[in-house]
Length: 221
Ligand SMILES: NC(=O)c1ccc[n+]([C@@H]2O[C@H](COP(=O)([O-])OP(=O)(O)OC[C@H]3O[C@@H](n4cnc5c(N)ncnc54)[C@H](OP(=O)(O)O)[C@@H]3O)[C@@H](O)[C@H]2O)c1
Image (cartoon, rainbow, N blue to C red; front, top):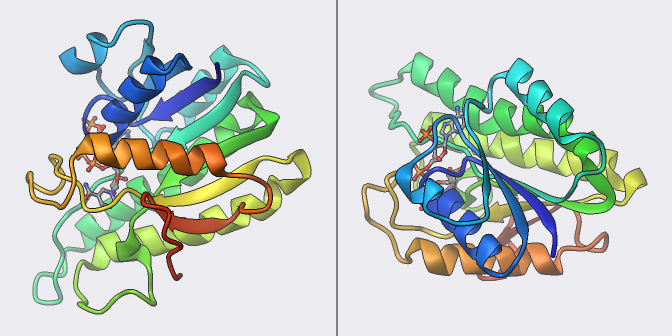
């Protein structure tokens, strides 16, 4: 049984991660801005609401409540997708996506890293849309830019946390039918979450700092 915290857990992929981790017997703290009926319905999970991933004070408060060395695994899932095109270059939307998708996970790891035990793991849910090498269709300015920035932050975190043997992985969940995609996609949350958990289980100091698809396929930066 592992002590796990999932940040961004009231719906979508995060909710399903909580469900599957709790079902296999892990001790799960589900952190979110506001809880949901579906989250409350999962038994044995500690729900902590009122935490926005961009809110440093809330993250520090969460860390203080958890205490040092409380977690084996931290997974940051929270993210947003807003449509931004060259013709409709909404800079506020770009900034929001940077704040939530790139800065948010960095703030979360900064605040919560002392809560992760030496030898523990951190998973950051990014997107292959943040891959520069894989960008063969353009557009999505704020989302792509913010996830590329998250990928860079994750790679730096892998270096900076190596002295405590904390392994960090950048995870692409697949194209998943959730609110974010308006229900379109190739897979459902159960398949995505199962793949993400498998990737987190196999994560080690040998593979820290890598960018992988939930299927296990390594992704190019
Ligand atoms: N679905 C896909 O195909 C796909 C593909 C690639 C990557 N991803 C990534 O996977 C992650 C989960 O996506 P999803 O498809 O499950 O999306 P979703 O159904 O829209 O869920 C997004 C989650 O992020 C939370 N969140 C958003 N802004 C937040 C903030 N400021 N602070 C804390 N939590 C916040 C939401 O909570 P609220 O209810 O409070 O808004 C919700 O729990 C995201 O990082 C996304 O970029 C998804």
